[in-house]
Image (cartoon, rainbow, N blue to C red):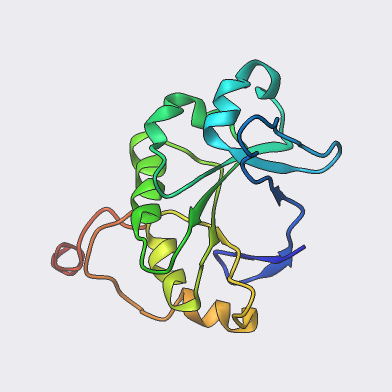
Length: 168
């Protein structure tokens, strides 16, 4: 299992398994006894079966809309957002929507093509855990999470831009 990086830079073993979307005509295969992240739309389709379980979370692909789950996001212990390619920034928007519009307070994880230079920006959008791409050096993660001492823009980590914070 890959390691997961927390927003404070600590590294821990990841017990969650990302369950891939089944092929056309196949059913979702979730292993018993292991925490699993399943596609968000399939969680919603089987809501009665999954609701209230702390061992089932969801993952959003970059083209998914968090609106599909609405207020039900608050029932999930973990939500992951897939970054299929480095240049695909839709996951940042998904994170901000989950935190700001839907009030999600649980663990929000970035998965997929996650690189070190993205970590601080992901953190500012509301992510609090990260699974790096396999070829990246996880030991550098803590430094990358706090590379900049100040941010100009408002985000999930501060509701005022820098010029307003300085004026106070």
